[in-house]
Amino acid sequence: MQDKLASIEERSRELERQMGDPEISGDYSRVQKLAREHASLKKLVGLASRHRQVTEDIVDARSMTRDDSDREMAALAREELAELEIVKGSIEDELRVALLPKDPNDDKNVIVEVRAGTGGEEAGLFAADLYRMYMRHSQRQGWQTEVVNSNESGLGSIKEIVFQIKGGGAYSRLKHESGVHRVQRIPVTESSGRVHTSAATVAVLPEAEEVDVQIAAEDLQIDVFHASGHGGQNVQKVATAIRITHIPTGVTAICQDERSQLKNKNKAMAVLRARVLALEVQRQLQERTDSRRSQVGSGDRSERVRTYNFPQNRVTDHRVGVTSHNLEMVLDGDIDEFVAALIALEQTLKLEEAGI
Image 1 (tube, rainbow, N blue to C red):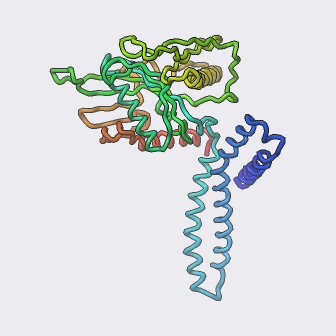
Image 2: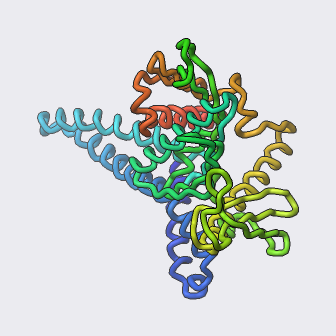
Image 3: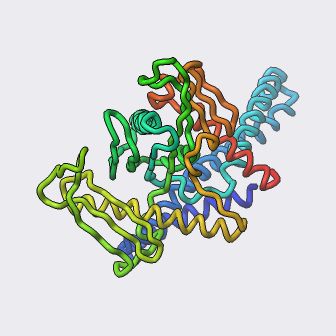
């Protein structure tokens, strides 16, 4: 471990030297790449420094325990040594996790897509609940959010909504939200009091930058049209809504949220890059595993990662077996318990795979 930590610290110093090199500083894309790598090593460098310091303190404390001339001081040193050994063990546990191969997308902003699944109007209302849940969670984290495109089907009901979340580590915290979310509750229109089950799908994509995925201008078809509201009425007299199609893959992205055509185009391109990158990642995974599995499934009731049960005031994540009995707080964005459990599960699986 010491050799690996030393090489990481040396790599961090080398990155600092490169970023300060006048020949490199003029290349914006390269500087961005170096800065991201340097930021990703920051925690490891800090842990390495703490590990080195506590190791030195242990050596000093151990030598003091052998001092027979001052028994009182030797006794204190033994107490300190025991505490330092615990601290060292804790740091080494952190290091084992930190040294695991990191998802290169963990520090990125995200594109979140929420769609109503099985369940008709009730599914649309639940999709709106999920959208608000992620908005509130983002506020709690101090992240910025922007709607890219939305398709509302009625009062408070959403067929589909696509939005950006910008903040450090957004993908690392939200990537496990992808999947089918199921709700069990009595709809307002249900006179017999029968509990209905509906579903909505969530897809979380890392926001791809130009350096992550190369898209040629000639591979794009860009259409401009009028943004429309409920009932198909034109919201604006000037056509500002943008639809971009990536011809080689058929992937499309629409943005009509902004009044500016340029802003809509930039937002649509961000979504398009994320979707194209996700498609490429999926293709690579398929090649390695020779299997294909959609990120969010079909939206059927039977496929689920989490269930929100209103009659029992209960939310259960089926992947980690974690249950909260405070549904109102969860829908208000307090999903930290689930996020922490899912991150811990990811780390455990990585440790097992690495044989640590």
